Length: 240
Ligand code: FPP
Image 1: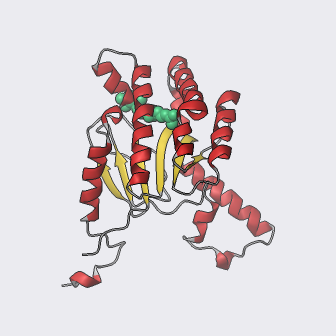
Image 2: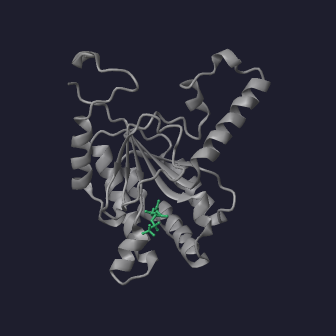
Image 3: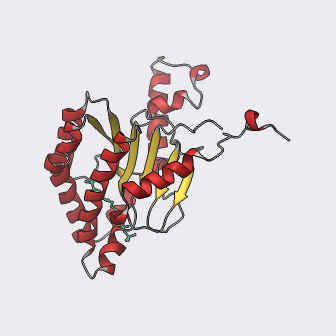
């Protein structure tokens, strides 16, 4: 069997809070450890030749958490985008964001713009950070952009199909091949629903701060062996 392609990996980074609480620490300690784990995983994914990595950093619904936790996460984003994630720049990784800036503090928006600008020409890999993001909301934004183009005569109804629609999503990223959710829950939580159509789904109990290169290698090796049929049959295996 031919090896499956792995162009776009997506991760729901869950379990930071429980990881910290199990150690008798505050949830914020887990988020900081999660940010460190993400840095290592993103660098490793590029080394593995994975061109696109999408991660769920903050859902629109996460604003419902305590003010203390939301404030901490916002500060963590600013710190990382301004300084720590300079490593991505050095390794030729382009950083993009999906989601909306509405309700985000100014310093977070400014740090997002800075890292996007600094890395915009990089080509070794793309890290898509979903921040203040919801998957259904992204589909609505895409349909609004499509209707604008339709009204402006830039596209016709006949030109639209499910491949073309990707161009209207936040960053025109390819379909997700493999999605990993850490932390034991088995749901998609409104994450990249359009792009996830034929993704292979892996739900693992490991809390995100403990997620590492070895675990990713094991999952990817398993993924390479999976028979992906995309709704059809595998011709090479026969259809009996
Ligand atoms: C889910 O774990 C995680 C989050 C809501 C935040 C994810 C953020 C990071 C991993 C840090 C990313 C940092 C940057 C700079 C992009 P949870 O808090 O819901 O954990 P729980 O399920 O154990 O409560």
